[in-house]
Image 1: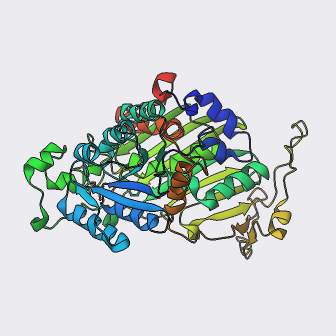
Image 2: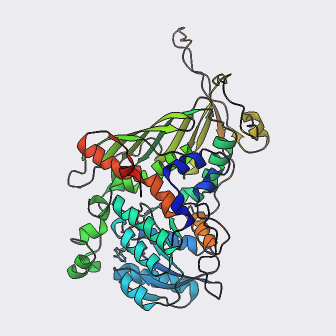
Length: 464
Ligand SMILES: NC(=O)c1ccc[n+]([C@@H]2O[C@H](COP(=O)([O-])OP(=O)(O)OC[C@H]3O[C@@H](n4cnc5c(N)ncnc54)[C@H](O)[C@@H]3O)[C@@H](O)[C@H]2O)c1
């Protein structure tokens, strides 16, 4: 059986996301609005698969969501499995069933409704496919897989099973991101025509070091080998290895490049990337990657630049910036980095442009009056340099701020959306098919950088 999402192709992705208001909702799996499996008690019985750093972050968010029963936990590492048991016991006052093997868990446990998967990337596809085939709904962390074929298998398993599969691109459910796309970019078009996009995830050497482990917690070599790890160093640092991960561009870049595609309502037509092991020379994956993407969007050509650097935290960490003729929105999951600028001299409206979409876009002043934007103190004008004034230097742009803070952990809205979709109360904001359409170009960044060649995408590169 195929889900309604199987009819989505890239053309729909472009057309529907360009449609303006509610674009995020359109990307949120049209047609999936059904109760997909709360148990008769109305509790959703959840299995936690992988309870490392991110598994624990997700659990902290899920603790705030009513109606969840954590029935089972699964992790190959005793240390993290015991932590999972303790965390669940602390919440529910009874122990979950504990497993080290997903197959054994799925064969033994009855009545599971959902799995939340936070294992290393190379396990996402096998774990997701098995859980969907066993009749569970799945929330799986990004990147969908370490290979594009692994990601394809996840989409197909979702479609075949008719179950829900949400991918953990949590910004897709973040109210600040949804407001910015729906209200500021699409409805009120405050950027004017977006022509360039920038994004980055920059991390200092200190935050990019190898992850250490206590020798007393070492996993037996035969267990490591059974689950695809060469040794304990590789188990802790799976992100550095080509067979286990896509490296920094996939681990970190996936977040921003997904936002490029979501906000533009388009996927790029080509990528040209470069990268190297300039500092961490022993790693299989590049420690710095820079990529250029060319887009043909419904609004015109866009060029995007993305960098992931693991030896500097310069430039404020991680963000995405949409630069238009009338303004720029720099947005980040870290609200202190988010900034909005209005060009001092907006571009004249094109007299041949078609009539504006309804509703008529609000001016920046109206948005401020309605509390949708805040005004920041104006920057002081630049000092004239020795009496020479270049008439073509742009005036400093006015700064604005977005209202509102996310008053919950950043992953919670995305998990809430998943469980609400299971109850038939919402639509998934990032089902596996939509995630795949947006993620597919990312799988081609490393091949471009390795070959020193641009890649012009064909259907073979981007199709499921
Ligand atoms: N969305 C986000 O913002 C975000 C942030 C961080 C990490 N992540 C993603 O979360 C996932 C996990 O990352 P992490 O940093 O927690 O990694 P981690 O290494 O800290 O944790 C992975 C856990 O999975 C367990 N595991 C490994 N193989 C397993 C198997 N075959 N079966 C069961 N358990 C297994 C490990 O023992 C470990 O407890 C990754 O896919 C990562 O990309 C997402």
